[in-house]
Amino acid sequence: MNETELDTTFAALADPTRRAILTRLAAGEATVTELAAPFVMTQPAISKHLRVLERAGLVSRDPGTRRAPCRLEARPLKMAVDWLENYRDYWEESYQRLDALLRELTDEP
Image 1 (tube, helix red, strand yellow):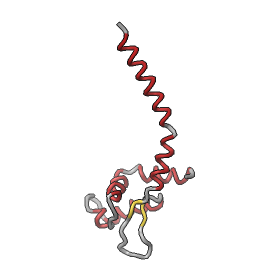
Image 2 (cartoon, helix red, strand yellow):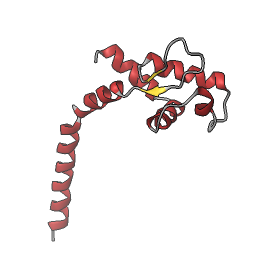
Image 3 (cartoon, rainbow, N blue to C red):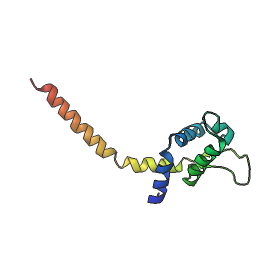
Image 4 (cartoon, rainbow, N blue to C red):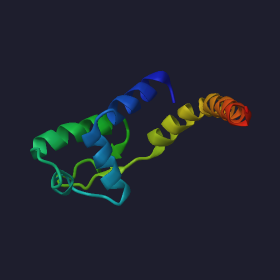
């Protein structure tokens, strides 16, 4: 994944409505009407969110079908997770240092 794709993925994930749409699509395909149902917003507003998700490659629809259901495309999510994995060692080392400090503090008389 190049920097632009990663930026687009994280920008799409920055909005809670878009994350909720992805959560819904993880359970299976859905139409725009079905995706809009739990939200207090118009279908055009949901469609705008879907366009952002489609540009990020996180959602797809069959072209040429007006009422085509939307489906989750998880590849960009995997690439974002892979990028975040680069920081796992940093956090593990930080927690290990914190654990060592807490042991020292609890062992002191």
